[in-house]
Amino acid sequence: MSIANLVPICANSRVNLRTSTNFNGVHTQFNSLLNYKNGAPNTQAGAEAWCAAINDANQYIVAGVDTPKTFVAVSIQGRGDADHWTKSFKVRYTLDGITWTDYRNGGALPGNTDRSTVVTHFFDQPIRARSISICPLTFNNQVALRFELYAQPEKYSFTQVGQGVSPGVNSNLNNSGDNEVFIDVVFPVEFKSVPIVAITFDHLDTRSTNAPDTDDFQQTRVGVQATNITTKGFKARFYVWGGCRAYDLRADYVATTFD
Amino acid sequence: MSTANLVPLVYNSLVNLRTSTNFNGVHTQFNSLLNYKNGAPNTQAGAEAWCASVMDTNQYIIAGSENPKTYVAVSIQGRGDLDQWVTSFKVRYTLDGINWKEYRNGSALPANSDRSTVVTHFFDQPIRARSIEIRPLTWNVHISLRFELYAQPEQHSFTQVGRGISPGANTVLNSTTNTGAREVLVDVAFPVEFKSTPIVSITLGHIDTTSADATGSDVYQQTRVDVQAINITTKGFKARFYVWRNARAYDLRADYNSLVNLRTSTNFNGIHTQFNSLLNYKNGAPNTQAGAVAWCASVMDTNQYIIAGSENPKTYVAVSIQGRGDFMYFYFN
Image (cartoon, rainbow over all chains, first blue to last red; front, side, top):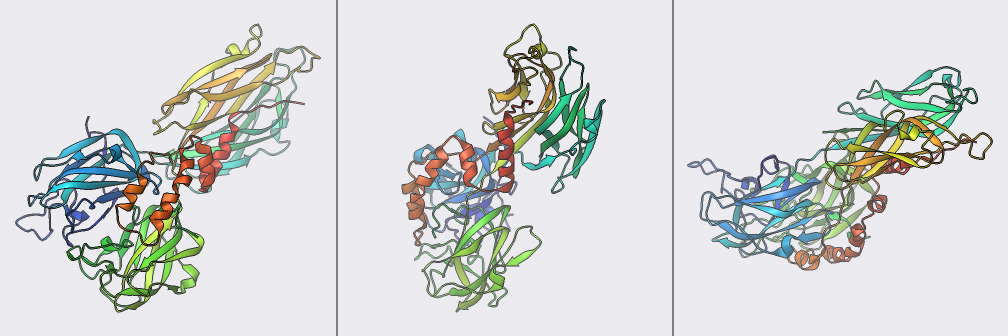
């Protein structure tokens, strides 16, 4: 298993981090990234780890994200500038923000044995969560760690819906011949990129003027499609052909972008 | 009113916190959670509160999130390790990130009178915002507070749309010799794989049909055509186009919308023990949250449509209406 093609969400600043306690103002979650270095011999930046102020099994660092992520793995590392590391830890998480679940029923996962070796644990199944908590259980000298969380890449979609797009009653679609009518549709808000638009019928009032006993007598031939799609809107093209006439039509649309 | 079934945003690390000023590096927003304890007699973790470094009415703590939240209540508490607390405060918020509004026109809300009693204010109406600000107006000795923000749980949906699914022209659906129920299955692959199995709505945008029923019969020239999504997986589905009786479809084209609502259930074992082993909630919030298991049990229902109905984000409701449209049965009088 590999962390290639996974998103390192701490490095990418995609999570908010809250800790149980911090040893002081330069031993905070700000220094918790994997391989964090304080610029020694200038050590004003503080500890090369998040370090708790209390050394017991009630300490934790919790990562929260606004939209759910699929967590695949967690990496953990010792403190870079002192012999402090987490020897074992457990993981807890929540998807709905109310109910928390213990990964492996709270079973201990192996952590570190030195300052620098990164230990990576791939979850038995990817964990779908909005908040995930790393909880040290045993530690060497002090509760301290550097870490990373790896999540699957995620797309974000934005959808707008419109109802009641119509060429109007008794339009040119109700005359003989192959006819089309274009209706301008403006999206409620402009999309950030050109969307895909699906448009289909919910009201049909059609008939046909083809001669009896022909192969296409009373054939229903009607369609609607979105054309000239931009970020601001599109033209709904209502059409009939082959003897079909539409007294009235109405369509709804769904427009979506994702990135 | 209760904070049960609400999401504690600070506790869950779901908001970014910015303060006007901090007294020093261990009096920051990092210590601002309700009931935060520094482990005394070891007080290296610092103040049991966020403490400002300037004492005036320009101090604040702002909670921000990427997506809008529906804020239902705010809890506020004094500093745990010294006699410092906020006695009144106001709330400001913004949804678009540009225009700020003052809750109750900026009037003061009552806060604390001691170190530890939690005071909870339920907003007159839930506040929809991306950023919300707590601004102390009066205080005892020093501007210091611990707090929590409670929001409604939120759904997250992801939608993919596809166009122009067609069985092709003049297929078995158009046959006059092979009549009766006929179907054509078309494989559809989603542009990207969903994280869980979606709901798929598929409807017709192009119809070219007729009927071979005999003249004078009750069903003469009856239009009978349908499209539905079957064998739906995270990667795609089969579009099933079918006609029945003597209906004939020369050509059909359909568009689809596929949507996942990602508020899925997980195991609920052990919630009581885990939650109570963490920071103490004195206002009873974890106790009532344990009561929320019953509510959470409804999340275990695999019918995500029902879960969606219990929340109310606007776009989701519109898409769900579309979802009902995946079977079209039309007839002519």
